[in-house]
Image (cartoon, rainbow over all chains, first blue to last red; front, side):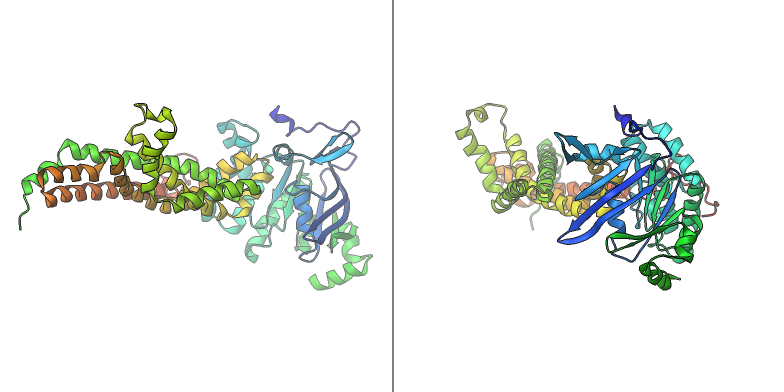
Length: 269
Length: 244
């Protein structure tokens, strides 16, 4: 059943008053260097979580683990009440094989810093590829859905253009449409505006704000402090592989509890 | 100077030369197809995480880059039938022996061309495909390969032309390809200049056509909306006046 992945079986007890994504005790080490040291958080349906923090603090690694692009060394990721990325066998949990992971990844959207659009495909084909090759949606229907999604990010007039013919901001908006068209449970953004010229940042943030207003569940790793303050429901400071502070935007920016947060904010304000 | 234009033209339009040229191109095409298939597998082996796969494909590439193609042809045509009686049957023709021999040698070189094309693709491409939920096979065929082919095309064109010329080696296993056709004629008539000149013309025609084919295929891999504006499909940009 290929559509099982797009409609995950809900855990027996899950309902939307519980976190849609739950991360517990997440650990990751690269070459003896501990990048994640027990990350824990919840995000509820329709929430936007902004993740701030210095470069190299492990923010991007955390997103890659949640997107199941890399295995965690330890810890649990639970999506809609169901643990993902692993299966139980004889009391032990083992990582899923790549083919099984692929099915679960379709539920989690990812937008990359460098867009990673497919250069050999037009904007429309970029958006269609997940539908046709993962969800087996017929070509015509996939095209219609892709066009609707490009319309949503304001780029339907660019559908036939190739990535090399689009500006950075346009490419990132196509990348957002490509993730969105898969109808993910949660959408992850890995510094989506860091690779953009300053004058192109606004159009991407506008699209993201629109998604937030439409009720999309989003985790946004970003350096855009103003965006975090205006759009996020919760702001997180990440440093040295742990979450230092986690609070509502007003609380986080106006009355930070931790010295580390105050120091960080003094640099970015 | 004694160059009989009549003999030259007569040979130029003779069925022997046409057949010889056809055989040269046919051997080269089939050898390239075989080399691409084996070379792709070897390139995957070389880039795989498995040490065994790396070792096996490394061994193949090492061996066939070291052995002269001429020796491989002689082994396949003479030594293998000695070892395996099934190859003494009629179906095992010089043509089959030639394209297999040239193909397995060429595969070692294609493996390196394909490997360098594969590793030149930005790792963000595979990452984006996987993030969409694509299986490893889909990531390879829909994302990585189309981009790798574009990079591998120009060096592959070189190899193709090389193979057309290497097909003349198959004269040692009695394949009547283009150069052998000329040589046979020379042996009977001693009209060296006319027969060799006819062969030159055929090689020039073949390589010209291959060059045209290559640039045609490369244009297919330009990835801009402009080259496809003839098709009024979704791939064509809509009216130029739309604000960007």
